[in-house]
Length: 230
Length: 282
Image (cartoon, rainbow over all chains, first blue to last red):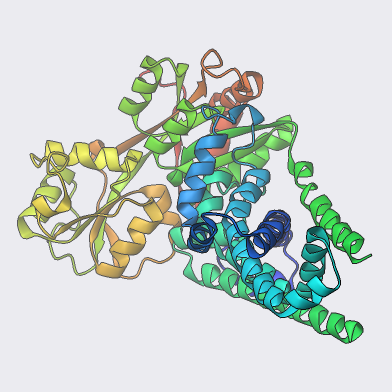
């Protein structure tokens, strides 16, 4: 990418390099959100609906993990995936898969903590009804997750926002390799280091527009879903 | 019913995530290299030529020389391409590679503000210039990241009789010396923002766009010479190293064709790197 044209111009002209960067960013962050949802929503439901010793401590820890520093997560995943680390034989370091793993670790606590809160609030509301209908634990979890689905979208969006915005973790485990592991955020960091501030700002604007567009889509889907669900 | 729909949605998302392995390339190597080769645009120029000839994708992870060598030590790269001869020889001694190939050189330049508070502009003596900067307490930015440029800077300070390395922190030296622990571009950005002096490799300087009031203060001293070397990570230490493909890349870099590609790379008509693979002593 030459610095003489702004990133917005690159978008308008359909620059294939920029398109690949945007596609990789979305692929990595959306995949991470999907995996984190598979882990986080059941975990959140479990914490919301069960009572066991140490549960409150677990909730406090989970809430605190929402603030995991990306650079620390990146470093930990890096040490695991490095050829000299325990999972080195997988050969995943400096690949998009490594970036998905790192962002999943970052995002899962956010989705789990927000899902826990949402489902617990709903549980207080539904408790007697569900008890009266004689629904078993699995059925309760399913009912609550289903009825909380629109609120859970917000949890997924919060997770996506975190994933799309972070640079610390994917820079370390992805290596910012041109055409392979370079994303919007690592490209912005690179252009800044090259002193090409206009291009970096342009890329930043593109990133923000994409995040707004995705939130808009999610909002529209939620509204449409609510209308259908009545 | 809704259970199944939820599961279906989750499965669809999961399947999307699994498309990731499609990104893996079959014929590719990982090269850990320095920010100077990347930020100067050299790789953007020579790697497409190499790929056109061999079909090998070169994935460059650019770091400071110290970090780039560590990446090789851990076996996370197939080839290291860096510029700090003493650190490279140590890498060889430790057995992480069996052969070092000199590839090219460029030079360092001392960058400073136009206003030139130390009064050293135009000097050809880097050592005298550094002494003057210290005596006058003119602001100086150090990479402080164990990169090749940082190693070179420390060596020059030593020649100037100022042991920056022994001073535990910037505090011991005084407020004029700031060690930022970041890459070349970041150091230039910092110098530009604070009108400070900074040692930079010429390649990064020429391609750097946010210069502000910065200009070259000192250049042309032989002690500013900056040699690049390339090494294959020893497959005996790390069996995962792709030795044939990695060696192919090295052989191409030092071949007449690779050397010409390097000398052909210019910014604004100015050549950035001078190939010297034939100079066995480099």
